[in-house]
Amino acid sequence: MNSRISCPVCASRRLASELTKFKLAMLRCRACGLVFTAPQPPPAQVISRYAEQWFEREYLPSYGIDPQQPALEHLAPRFALDLALIKRFRSSGRVLDVGAGAGLFLFHARRHGWHAHGVEISEYGPAYAKRHFDLDIIQGDLRSAEFPDQHFDVVMLQDTIEHVPDPLALMKEIHRILRPGGGVVLSTPNYESAARRMFRRHWALISPAEHLFLFNMTSLLCLLQRSRFAPFRLESNAELHENLFHPAHALPPLSWRSALLGRVKRVLPPAAIHRLSLGSELHAVGVRQ
Figure 1 (tube, rainbow, N blue to C red):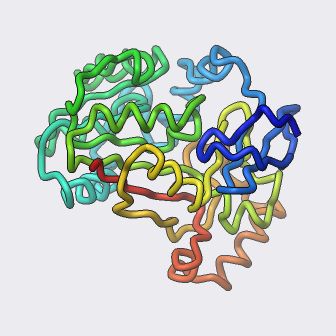
Figure 2 (spheres, rainbow, N blue to C red):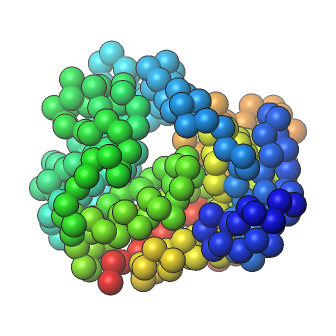
């Protein structure tokens, strides 16, 4: 192993080869358990995935939205859970969604009285959000947005941290723009989930060109602590599935993976999945000190 490479989260140099998939290698940190693509594909290649075709064929349909005639009322219960969570430490103020997509969360946050802001790396998402929902989302990454210090009360980072080239740098920037007592709310695939343990490299969410980083509880906690956040919540969900974000990750109903997952679901009730941190997704809230 190249001794010059260190873990992007904990900085340990105790690394091991984890797997190769689609001709891309992923390493595992023996200290914190982070799994990451090394070397990473060029940034332009990563960004090119999130073009108009991806939004209209995968992203919007995954939320049950017709790209040409979008209606968002059916998403209210889904986002109500996020809004209830952030109100536990902030009742109102400015919320920023990093990786805002087409502004679906921000649409509902604005309805609940939040001053809604977003950044999105793709060009199509902000244009779509402006055209259909009159939302102003900045196109680009967070650092290029150049927000003032201590500007936001809450930052949402849902299914985003695994895509960015430097998660620690992103979290430090989020810390800078959050007010003291504000929080970052994030979710990401769980590398120690029951599904990944069963399917190993065949797990659909092992996609090295797209998911550059795959976290477990230890590495996610390390990320929060190294970016100076106090953990307010850190857990897996209680669900056991692979279809976290879009139809491309769905299991064919008659596949061997679907059959195996079904048998495990019958043995492990949701409460056990949650207690053992075997759910398909990790959820965390960090509070800025």
